[in-house]
Length: 535
Image (cartoon, rainbow, N blue to C red; front, top):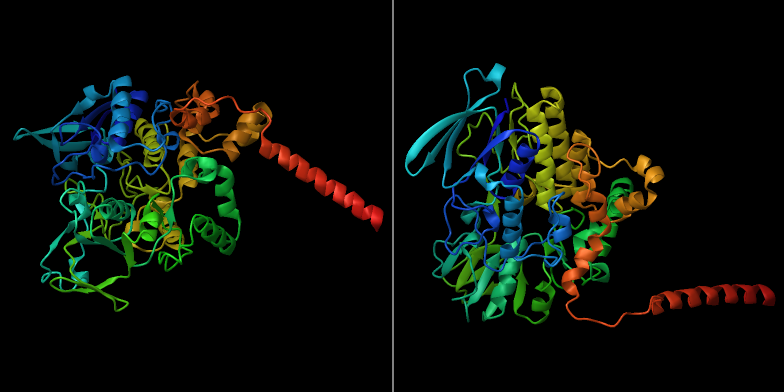
């Protein structure tokens, strides 16, 4: 008989977990507290308690080819970076294609998840839910928590003396929906992550003045990279990841600084990070430097104190007549339906093996999916987590001893602090390609480059030097997809398709730039021989 799995949440992680359960022959039931799928990516005008909230203009920071699920490319006419409504459309197409909606119980809240009395032998869980005022309980063989980590606003008001005297309006960024009503205002945005930067840019177009306060500074990166390709399709390659792993840290840090300053000099704009050698997640925003050049946004240091109408900063400067303060200070997370003994959140951190499994359970029948912040797209990451988890549930993969898992948790945390620092916003941070390969290795889906070099050298080169996309993890192993190779070689076509909306005459097959390189090489050769002749 198929094992019954409770999936909590029907956002991105919940949807892919459902599909992975079905692929492995498990019997999933998904509990979603709202009336629809999509999680954080489904925009709603009204903020709801316990649910993630986004502003109307949100666009993805990772491109479609690096974000799609591994056996289901996004439509080629979709833009490379998607508005939240377009991404939700993809999720709907995905759910329909794999008939996932029938497994979801909407408007059903999970109240508690507890071990059954015989857990040490059965590994089963009792899940209590509530729907339309009625409580129900059911026993499941395994549980996948997919409830996300962007729904509890973190507002450290104690760090802002005088906030109780401030006469203007102040709120967390999750309350922000659109720029209406902020015209002509003097606005202070506290925090310069992706949300804070997006909101500051949007408001600056009609506000009297926008100030953005940053404690440590930040790198700002454009979505547009080399030759106009999406940033992540250029940055996330196995070759570049290998260089970052094998080169001395000082060299890597120097390379990162040079790369980040290629677009504009961050020091000149007052944005250079305080510790520029920590690999903190950069801000993805194409408009920040432009708005700074125009004076519509002004960068400020940490807020030292607030008065009734003004903000006093650590550098001694004062900005008067502040109308609105927006706290873009991130999120904390919790699991109110779980006991602390199962997953305890301390200082915005949890102790989980590879960010997934509690190490102390007698039976490996509980997992958290998507409770991670990779330096890349969360979608392929959550998918590989779910593929591994469902095989563990099925007994096809096994976990090491508790001692081994605890050692891994400690070592991984030390490495995270070394790479990303100790900021609360970085507690779930991890390298992207390394982590994907690590998960793929667990299920036998990591590409075998040595074998491919002999069998399919063209593919091997593309895998190593090209974008590390999710299709690579469907070439071999369980869940192998026959369309994976084709998807890898046609990726460029899908990237360029939405851009080619104007018909151009066919350009020469022999580019001028290539001709110039040949002529330049010939000139060097001629000069060399001429020098030999005259010497």
